[in-house]
Length: 360
Image 1 (tube, rainbow, N blue to C red):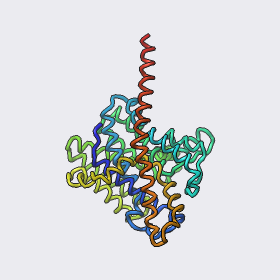
Image 2: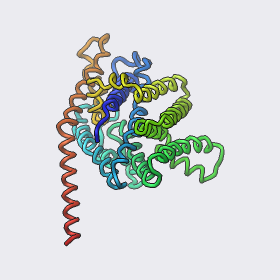
Image 3: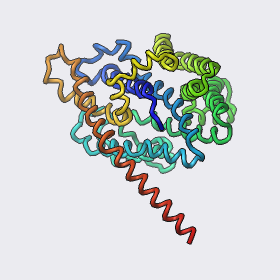
Image 4: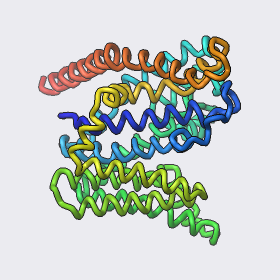
């Protein structure tokens, strides 16, 4: 599939937002500069980079669904896209954790590798096994949401097609919001179960996926209706997010991100602007960098806090990000792709083997 460069630029923006949030606003009680920079808007609202990732996913997943002929084929290629980097990064984090004892999450246990590698969240694994599981990295939570979205989107697409998929995803989001509001008003079991299921499946984020899918249809068909629908979904999702956060400034921040994304779909100049080498480089490594960065970055900042005067401590996060970027780049460039090809080759041979056995 031909990559769209400005989407990689958006990935670069999204991962930078998340990095800056974790570096300056998330762990203020641990880093040497404390909360000196925590309220700077770019840092404070950096966590909204995840919503930008979800917008991109909605766009890309519908585009990907149209490339494959079956649910199984689609899910296999999605798994193949995610698993190699997850495997490499999970093992890297696990085996290096002892050298980063300052990790906010502490040293992970071997069983904590299972949620990430299986893309099944610790809650469900705990319910199924009776054991306690934790993420080796906090950021894995969004991968579980993504994987649930892939499954649900593929099912909807199989039965409903592209256009109705957008509506169905939006209705999932509306279901979450409506039943969340109704739940405190009644003891009805059906309301409780629908609310619990929609919450577990991550429907609260499906507005972003729906908007991204709607924007894809706009780009594909050049039909302004889909652009307007995507913008309306973004607006509603932004309002819900701000209401839950009880913060009007959160609404402004996510609205800016949404408008920036939607504008890039119709502005060639903006597409060129965000397709610069810097953002494309971060976009290229965004997935392994997202998986690796949080605990390691904070640990490096704490480890190196004495190498610079306190008035220059703001430089420490950028040194840590640079180091982790190089690791992520090596994984993306030299390890992830060969591993993906090896796995793909293995499954191709397995399919051919069983196909030949059936013939004989």
